[in-house]
Every structure is written in C-alpha cells, then in structure tokens.
Image (tube, rainbow, N blue to C red):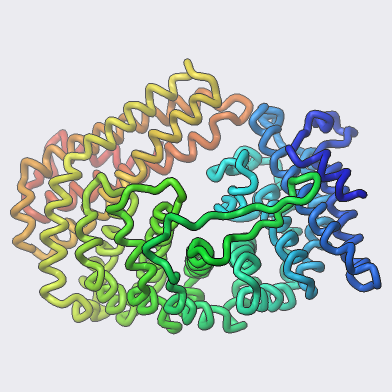
Length: 577
C-alpha cells in the first residue's frame, strides 16, 4: 500500500535520495516532501466525506511521516551549512508551505476520529517548527520519545535571514489562520475538553504554538472568548495524579505499524505520566496567553494564581528541586512544571503591574510555598532562583509606586524577603561567576574552533552567564528598592562588597564588548548572526547590573560621581557601540 511504501522510505528519515539542489530551477527535497504531504491531506479531506472513510487513518499517518521527515531534512540541511548562503524562495518554497497549511487547517477544523486528529496535530507541530513561525519552536517531550534523533533544543533560527522570505511565509500563515480562526479554535477546544489524554496533550501544545504564531492576536481572541481558560483553570485543581509518589514510573509507549515512523503514541493508562503531560500542556498555553495584557486579565480573573497555589501537583513540582533527576523523567517533568508555574506568576506581575489583586495572590503563593522557594535562593538553584527573585523584584518595585501595592506586602513578608535577599546578594556578589563565563565565551569566539563547535561552546557559556545575569539583575533591583527606601537591612551588604561588585560588573561589560567585536569579525556566510544576538543581549543585561550597582552606591551615599573611575564606568554604560 501507499502507506507502507512511504513508511519504509521515510521511517528512518533517510534523505540521501533527496539532496537539495540549490540551482534556481531545481526541485528541492522540501518541495518534494511538502507535495507528497499535501496530496495525502487532500486525499484525507476527500475520503472523509465518502464511504472510504476507513482510509483516513492511513492517509493521516502518511502525512505525519512526511512532515517528520521534512523537519529532519531541514535540520540535516542546516547542519551541513547548505543554507548559510541565504534563504531563497526556492529553498523554503513559500507557495508549497501555504498550500499545505491551508489544507491542514481545513482538515483540523473538521471532526475526525481521535487517531486521525493525533496525526494531524503532530503534522501541525512539525510544520510550525519547519516554517519557524512560532516563538518557542521545541518539540513536546511525548513526541521526542518517538523521534529521539530530533534535538529538543533545536531551533531554526539559522534560517532567519534578511531576504524577507520568512516575512512572506509568516504573513501567509497568519492570513490562513485568521480565515479559519473560529472553527479551528472550537475544534481544539473540543479535543481539549473531551479528547482522550494524548489527543488533549497534543491539542494543548499545538494551540500554544498557534497563539505564538499569530502576532495579530486573532487566535488569541478566539481562545479568550471560547471559555477554555476557565475550564482549564478548573482542571488545575483537579489534575492530581493518583500516584504522586510513583512519578518516576510513567513513560510513553510508541506504537508503530508496518513501516514505522508514524506518531500513533499512547501512554500507559494506569501511570501518572499522562497527568504531568496534560498539566504541563495547560501551563504552556497559559504562559503563551500571558504574553498579552488581555490574556493576563483573563487568567487573573479566572483565579489561575490561586488554583496554582493550592495545587498538590504544583507543590510536588516545587519540592522536586531537592530531588535528584530520576531515570524515568518523572522528576524532570515536575521541574518543568515548577518552572512554568513561576514563569506564569512573573508574567502576570509584569503584565498587570497596577493590579493589587494580582500582587496579593502572588504574595500568597510565595508565602504558601516559602520554605521551598526561599530555600532555593542561591546560584546553585538556577533558573528557579532567578524566577523567584524576578517576581520578588517586581513586587518590591510595585510596592514603591502610587498604586497602593504596599498593602499587598505585609511587614512580616517584607522582613522575611529582606533577609533572603541580603543572603543571596552575598552569594552572588561580586558577579565573578558571570565574568568567568564571559571570559570563556571570549576564548571560544576567537575563531580557532569550527563553526559548529564554536556555537556549541558559546551556547553553553551563554546559558550559564544568562542565568547568572538574570538573578543578579533581580537581586540588585531589590537592593536598589531597599536603598531608595533607606532600608537598614542594606547595611548588612556594606560598601566594600558593592565597590567590588561594581568593578567586577564593569570588567564583565568590557569583556562582552570584546566578544561582540570578535563575533562581528566572523559573520561570513551568516554563521555568527545567532551568536551576535546572544552576546548583545548579555551586554545589555550587564549594563543593567552595572547601572543598578551604581544606583545602590549612590542612594547609600557611597558613590563619588565626580571620580574618574565612576565617570569611565558611566560612559561605558551609555556607550552603544
């Protein structure tokens, strides 16, 4: 059968017979795969309305196989450097992408059996990853169990060039989504509310990606108006696995028919892993919705913060930070849930800075879990400590405004926080660990390493440095607020530590300027574009740390603004070069 034929050809993502021809008139492997996938979808759309409905599952599975192969093909081509010469319309084939997406959205908007919908959701996720229209292009863990050769951290950012191809692709995708937004979201809603656990998990993840892929907010508005947020908020309290103590036992089983390569996956029904996946899917959608003020308002009014605070699963997730990661991934899943929970709290604080209710509810969450959250405030508990500190920083900053948030922070809570903030400052300052990571980045950026090795080495140093910068910014923001309010707790920091911190952060700033110049000299063929963007981000973060330290010293009366040293530091902070 056609299904068996395609399954055999693409089950191991063998693309040797589909080498990309870069000639303007050449047919690419992308075009071939998309053409097959589109034809399969069109066949699915046709047979679904006829007496041949039994062919729907094979056709949907073929589409899924082809789209998984398309993503793998894209990854292989990028790794080979074939696309570093620039992306052309012939390489991505915008017209083929739009045709496929149109048919896929149409199929997803119609009812179908659960297996067909699972394959379609998988195809949608693979397409969005290939087209790079989502801000968070990562495969969900349940799919990675099947496609183990796909890297969870794989991003297609190296496809983003300056020739406008992706802009045209994104505009077309948004137009297609807007035309079908209402029907599409209703179909997703039905699967999220009534679907079996795996269909529900896939629908949640795919919907998160669609919201991210539509900056105009049409999909978001449909999500906010259909009632799914209230339903899912209610699910947060009910999503307590029957066996929280056996979280390490859950696993994902993949069932593949003849030929392999499809995505007919299911989780063992008696195991709690499925609850984790669905819970994580809900949080991922909430976090994406919280990127807009309207989304924050709906989440806050739905009682999401209090639902999270009272959730036994969230409590277990926060406690998991003190438990070694287990071989089955249960603890790893819990840690992802704890991170998503704290990210949602932070997003609501930032998105609704004037809301006293949000400030009160976030404070109550922190108080309820204070033993765990305050116990992780050290640089060995990143990124969780960074998220807690960022949330505290926002609460402290808002308490000093005219919005009346000071009432949300009772004196006991403030005193408790101050002690932990001062202890964290002594752990973080001076920021020598961040400086050492930047020095390592500079050594990796000298060009003696190959592009792939240099990228990997710099990525590791960047991730470590960014986590340290994040928490240092939050910590110094809190110290800055304390200094502005003439808080006596700041006396425990002292002038000497602040002076050493200023010098160290300035040294780090100069090192990052040098890294920027080095990376700029290795931009041939677009190889250094991604690295340069990361270094620029770190450079700006370091400016904030240095500026905060200057402000704290000045508020405490420790700063001589006329000294040559201080003037030089201020000039470097204001230097945009």
